[in-house]
Image (tube, rainbow, N blue to C red; front, top):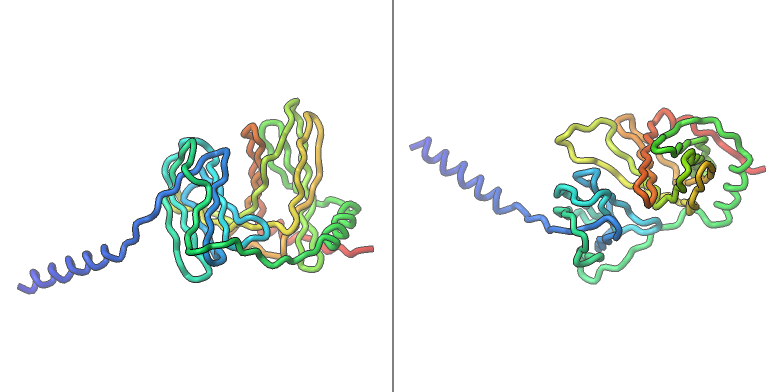
Length: 264
């Protein structure tokens, strides 16, 4: 009798647990179009289940997440978004050549919320002029298909981190960067572990012009001061419209080599 009552209790607990499950919504995305997810509150964290999709919070915005496929016909994956009101939004992501919609609202009367601005344009231009005269002291690079992407220096001024890069195109084919993304990810991952990442939005991110064959181009990107935990790594990704893809891993030791600079 006791065994029967224990079985009934366990069965009731399982049924009760099943009733709390929330079915995830399904979202379709593609490679050459960006899907925008609009929330009522600022995004606190986002977690994608696969590297086959790209996610980012647009610069200067708090409550919009942009999602795009990295490659066509990827296997279904997941996306979780936690907002500042404590809500967790779970989505199943599928590939579609022509998604039925490109903007989804996850709240009543959701509107775009703009983040506070840290640096004004005159400060940015002043920092860029000073940086142009500062020497490079790093050579941390990523190479792929004739393209070499080099981190030449990291400087800090007024709690703003400046990363200076050089891109060399040693091929005869023009390199036309589509976008550059930065995120903090777990240093070590297992196959069963979802990709834990946090997108970083630069305060200043210049438009990188097409780089002709056998030519080079320099540019600098700035962020509000941050640190990299020992179990994390800063991932910088740059790809062009032809599919060439470069990934640079920046650890905490490299960030700690940042130097101060002072305006003349």
